Amino acid sequence: EILIGLVGSEMCIRDSKETWVEVKDQDKLWISKVLQPGDTYKVPAGSGKILSVGRVDAVEVLIDGKVVPVVSAAKKTGIALDKFLDANH
Image (tube, rainbow, N blue to C red; front, top):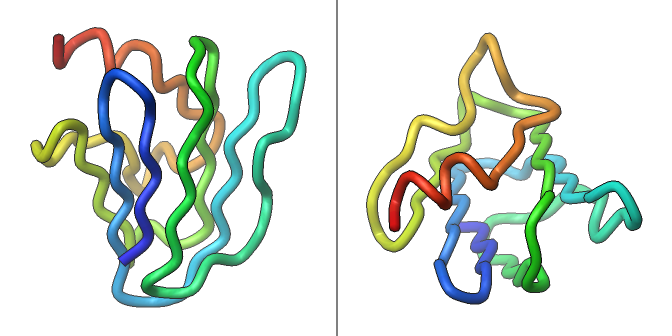
């Protein structure tokens, strides 16, 4: 299970296989690496975060414990997280 946590909300990415994960905003690349099951990464506070993942077949995203269809076969890169976080508050 790969966990990505956001201050104010908790975003979790769970996977059954290793997968590449990237989180960035317009100013900084926060992470871009292959995470193994069990790894944890907490995204720093702030808006404008963009998520990309390598393996959609092994990734499930939860915001505040609720499964959210953030990643799909049609959209696995360049996913703006703000709209998903705002929708869950």
